Length: 421
Length: 165
Image 1 (cartoon, rainbow over the protein chains, first blue to last red):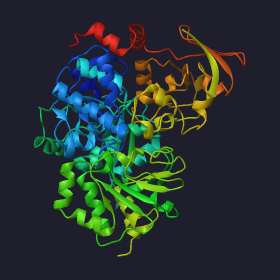
Image 2 (image 1 turned 90 degrees about the vertical axis):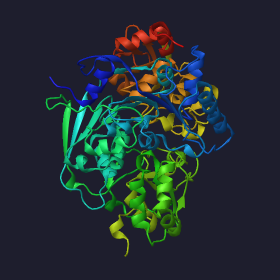
Image 3 (image 1 turned 120 degrees about the horizontal axis):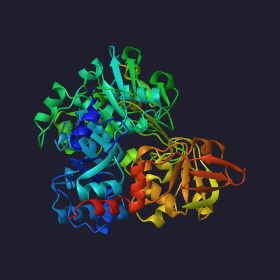
Image 4 (image 1 turned 180 degrees about the horizontal axis):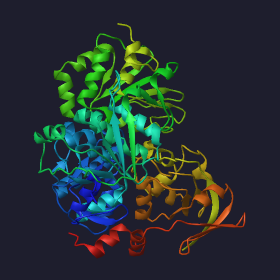
């Protein structure tokens, strides 16, 4: 019996020929990462367990991206803990000053994660790297500390659900719409404890930037990982970036799946997730009565250069509606510089948007764009839980960059087709 | 391990932002986190919950972020255990790793009401609802998780099993 990509990576990393869903493995990891919220606990746990040295100083990544630039004194103390630990351990993948990027935009871009890797990260959106054909999953700080000490992690081999995307994409429908639609279909626990495998002719045609958006949100359906089979697009992306050797694993033709779900993408129109769960999806066209106070374009979900290009295409020569604060957050320094070189920043600022440095800040209601009571945001981020972006009586609607940019101009939720030429 | 306490009931899909909002994640001090436990689901929770009380919730408890601060806040505010229909994957791992007892039981999740007093016999996997005079079965925990609990947590397990530098 064949294996799927999730099973193949877990088998290879635990020295086995074959693994089955439900089987417990202790596997060798290729990378463990943590951020300025989760690393402080991991570092404390690491030290209190009596460990003095990380297992491999080239395989521990610390990215202080959540509350940086330091939003207050306590955050500054947390960021300082990472800095001191990174110096003491001589970590090669510690990012500071302008090198900080949003971790899940940064690590694939810098070639720190490559196909075939097994990655654990003390951040739930670690599943993003599945788009590269890596098995990557979010864990807590103690699991991260265990990884830092031993270079290992334990996994229950998950059953996999295969998603097949067919048909022609409608105008303004992006990979973000596909994943929101999928979560709307299966629910926020539709893939609980399971690996999601995204396949089909539509996925094959997507760029790496677009694919990373899909895998990023596997956790929003409860998924343990969100994998894609590497192809020429993947190899093209990693060959100019890879820091270490990659290995291509792909699912066998006779691989087992718990379920196979097919979507005809020609039936999907731009999707918005309404408050307060990502599964509350509706077509954007049905929400034109929802006025917005803030439009957020960026994050680990949609802060890559292609996302910014789409936003710029819509905002070019237009003005942000006077009732809206439009905040644009690139994922990394490289994307930030690229946006400057391509003239995107001129378009954004000219339209009345705010162009910020990379940070997770507004996505989780940390800083740099908090909502007041009763305010409404349209956002390209990944969660719209109660209070996610600020006051518990504020609301977040999740969308693609195209819909968020259009809504910033319209002052209400809408699609680019509704903007007057 | 026997646990007995008064129940506070929550709904389905309680996410980690409800358990401990991100605005308080600029610290990892358990006592600080405890003050804001469940704040965005019930503002008065941290003030009224008693030591040893039990949280009972619906499906997918702890969904969302990987923040270990969530089970830490629940434990630090004095809650003795959480019973739910099921748990989000990362929250489940984190709870074991930090020593917050959690129990999966569809029946208990459905039948226990706020204010009931329940007793849990972890070894036997039985929840007794003393108020309603009912008993419910707990879904057994995987043997490896049992091994972790017996070792005294993941990092103690690491020390017995691997060479730590």
